[in-house]
Amino acid sequence: MIKQLELIMANRYFDRRMRAIFVDRCNAKGIETFKKYLAYRYQDNCYYYSGYAIIGLNNDDYLMRGDICISGDFIWGNGGYSHGWVEFKYKGKEYVFDSMCRWIVPKNEWYEEFKPNVKFRHSKQEIIESFKDKLQILSKNCYKIRSSSIYDYYTVNVYERGKLFMHREKIKKFIAYDEPSD
Image 1 (cartoon, rainbow, N blue to C red):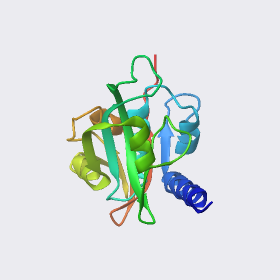
Image 2 (image 1 turned 120 degrees about the vertical axis):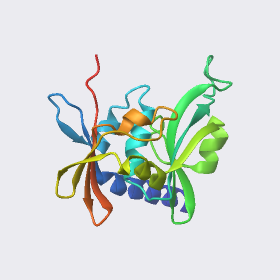
Image 3 (image 1 turned 90 degrees about the vertical axis):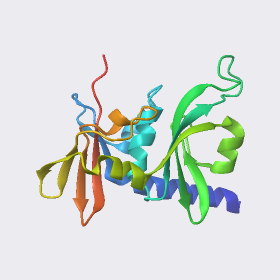
Image 4 (image 1 turned 90 degrees about the horizontal axis):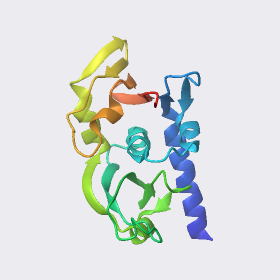
């Protein structure tokens, strides 16, 4: 019972942190909340979901990339599925946000299930630093991200053309720019 309550609280924490994240889908739908965008669960968009989510979390939380095993899958059951996820702490415990999962998952359980081969691990602080010198000032406290210096594992274009709204060096809002798909 206590474990379930802790998991519910971790999910609520994550949801609250995502309130500062929006996605401009560049179409008739306009700007959406991260929660609404996540509800679509677009296939093969894990790099974007995780890349956007890390911006709403703490500086010492991590954006992850690597290969995972998908149990029961004929092709990916033994690994090799390229994937992106986020690892974060809440009240001293480690959790994973993975767009393939409906809820936040305790890190040890997620690792046991997906057996990741981690190839990329950068903190939110490192991600922010990677584009700090590549910001275009749009107005007071509003910046457009031109690029990132992290070119590993499908990360560089995740942030391009996104907008950061800052207050005293803290991100108050992030609007990701999502290209229309063909």
